[in-house]
Length: 185
Image 1 (cartoon, rainbow, N blue to C red):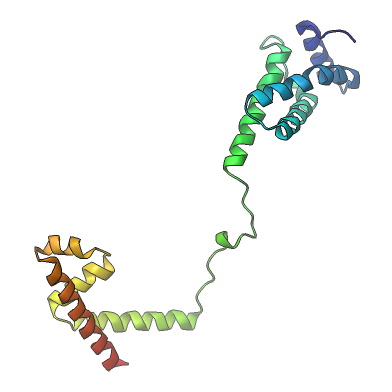
Image 2 (tube, rainbow, N blue to C red; image 1 turned 120 degrees about the vertical axis):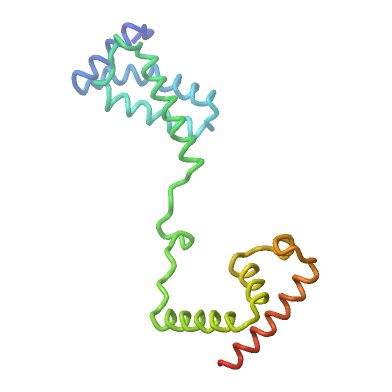
């Protein structure tokens, strides 16, 4: 068969583009497949992955030979560009694996039954009503701590109170809230 010159490689690609020319592809494959595999290994692919990617590259050459334009690039440049792009795609796939539709972590939360939604709404209303019946300072501390999710030290800074005072007033507010909720239950 002889060595594949750049012109001959381009001619073989043109022949492949004209129609399914198995002989042309066989020569291209014999010449480029081992070189592409070696190139992919140099790009960091493991041996097995380099082999699979080289097969994909040559399959792309078979399927898309009509896209080759010798005025734009040499045959080897075109083939090795395909190889580089396949390697980049493989790296992206490895970093972002495909989602498993059966993975319970991505399943949506089941919708809460209507009776539980009603109960939750009633509990929220009871809680809101009980908080409103607390002294304003205690209600404010509860809102800052539990509804706005602020730390005790942040509340102490905002209200210009000692941290110990904030903690003791919150404990008192929670105790009164518990009593109010027990009275309504």
